[in-house]
Image 1 (cartoon, rainbow, N blue to C red):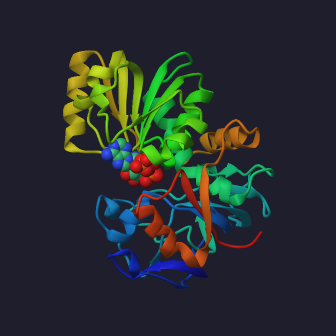
Image 2: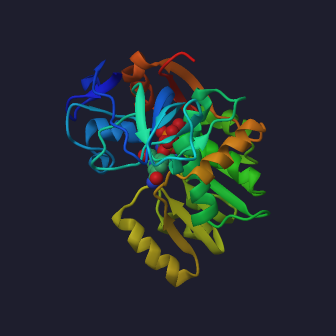
Image 3: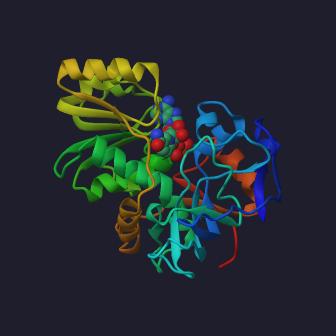
Length: 320
Ligand SMILES: NC(=O)c1ccc[n+]([C@@H]2O[C@H](COP(=O)([O-])OP(=O)(O)OC[C@H]3O[C@@H](n4cnc5c(N)ncnc54)[C@H](OP(=O)(O)O)[C@@H]3O)[C@@H](O)[C@H]2O)c1
């Protein structure tokens, strides 16, 4: 199958387009013909093999890579009874040191209880863009942050993939949302529903003159110590990247009556279907900044690395 292929870790120009074996479907899996994929910072880490990239994907080359996908079920395993050939599904491949699959390719094989049903009125590009970013935002805000209606949340990195979904999902959960972003992307964050947008380059989180029930550090650039003064009593700081400081923050949180948490996103049908419903009803938008064809995955990765994306970059893998 045609795919973006990694022949080893290195700079982005080591990514090549070419042919690689299609994945073999297990008895409890479905084979999905990929129509669209989306770019994540995790893809950059897999290519470089740094920043934890070695824990996200196999270092067994040559390999396909890429996580988010949306497509059409091509075949179902003998033990699968709740999906049929022709179903339109979306989701993301699990982070794993053993996977050699990737969504920047024509096929993925995946367990059916980890995919959502793509609504007919959204595109495959929109569905793929929502998969990791939307699931991460939802799990961080609702499960880890325990965000409730009427509360106030600050999203650090609100113009990025996870952040742009977090602003919209927090609004859906009934919260008042503030966000941080660079000046050029402030209007984008406001358009997503943020009540206030703060430039992280000129105002540090600790200097924000307001208190929050939840601070979601989608950019994962801060620490519990930096934000604890802007958390209300019982408030939660949630980050997306593990670090040594995280464990110190968990202890400080425990001692201060606040919480410091970390989310590692899980692919679950229930979460993906909730995102699908919000997208289908127009309650959230997919935040697709631009869409590129499969052969331009190397260029799309370079755009992501340069920090030029508002929301998400999507990839059309096959015309549909
Ligand atoms: N744990 C998990 O399961 C999980 C899941 C998904 C993602 N992640 C990780 O979470 C991080 C964010 O993912 P993403 O997809 O949202 O990335 P992204 O689309 O690249 O967005 C990054 C965001 O960070 C902002 N930013 C950059 N420097 C900043 C700073 N110094 N202070 C505050 N904000 C800053 C950017 O703002 P401007 O563009 O306006 O400058 C942008 O909004 C990545 O490291 C990713 O690997 C983890």
